[in-house]
Image (cartoon, rainbow, N blue to C red; front, side, top):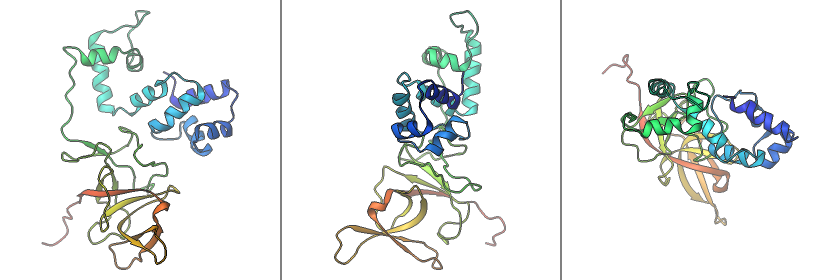
Length: 265
């Protein structure tokens, strides 16, 4: 099965489109398109971006999405599916054994999974993607609720999370101490409304992100709401931003904190 990036590049070139032209038509930045085509992104693009690429490049509906979903499947689940496929002795039209990709696209894998012997036991709890890594900081391509499921390199289990779109981050720096420490994992639920006084993951329209406590205020003579970003660490100063500069406010709902074994009780 051809990789997603080269497949997109080949189709773009076949249509005689430059990266600039594809960027404009699909509303995806040129640098990010280049990363996709050359396979330098760790995870597939969001479903929304893939759908725009399908329409712009003339792929069959769902063709890129299906391939991306297979690519996002965790390794342990892929291994289980490959074993199930091997045990079924499923063959293609030419009589040769099907690989996982071919079985997925042909629908064979779905039929096996839905069959009487194909029930797959799902893990307990809800896996929540951790979308930032200590080495790279916050993600640059995080776009509201379209962060692709099963695309992160790390997950945390949270049995009681009320939101299928929940995501998590690792805390960096000391701006939110003493309540949150370096490397704590905080889970956010986009389905819950952010209230004044909540700790929130803030996604700006520029793509920048941060983690702060928020307070909704108004300026004298201005009816537009102002958001005060208030670090919990008193050494850090608050920041005032206009509400229309913020693309998303995501409320913190859970925190995982490492127990410091050196701390004296």
